Length: 246
Image (cartoon, rainbow, N blue to C red; front, side, top):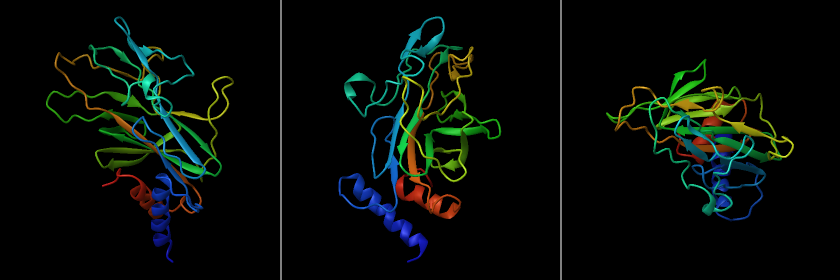
C-alpha cells in the first residue's frame, strides 16, 4: 500500500475512534472544537482555553482569572464560562483587549501541533504579526503578535491562516500544572500592549458602529512519526482531519 493510501486509511480510523469505536491506532490525532470541546484519540490529548476577562472603564478588558489560570474551557462544565469564547461587547477606541487563547497538550508520542485562526490574515510573517480580516464595510482590524513558539504554516488557508508549533521533528507534551509551572502551556499571542496587560488594542479610529470579524480558533495534534519532514503527507493529514485548507 502506498504511503498516501495508508495515511488516508489511518485518517479514517481516527474519525471512527473519535466517535467511540475502539481500535488499535497506528496513527494518532486529536482536534479541539472552537474553544469548546476536546476530542481524544489514542495518546494525544489537546485542550484550548483562554482567560475570562473583566471590563475596566479606564483600561479595557483585563484578565479576570489570574496569570496562570484559564477558565474559559467547556471540556469540564458548560455552566462556568462562555460557550464560544469571550464576549467583548463594550469596546471603545484605544481600549486594551486581552485575548489569550492557549493550547495545552498531553502526549505519549512526539507530536506536531497546529492552530487554525479563522478570519485572520498575515501582516508581517517575519515579525509574527497577524490581524482580523476586513470583510464588511464597517469592519476594523485587530492586530496580534504571535508568541515566538509559533510559525505561520499556511497563510492562504480556507478563510484564515494555520500556525504550527515550532519543532524539529515533534515534541512530547504534558499537562500544565499551575501549582509549580511544570508541563506545557502554549499561548498563541504575546501580551505586548500597555505594559503586558493585553494582546491587542481597539483602533483609535473605531467610530461608533464599527465591527470586528470573529476570531475563531481550533487546534490539531498529529503524531509526528511518518509525518514530520514530509510536506505532502503533512498537508494531507490536515485535510483529512479538518476543513482548514482550500
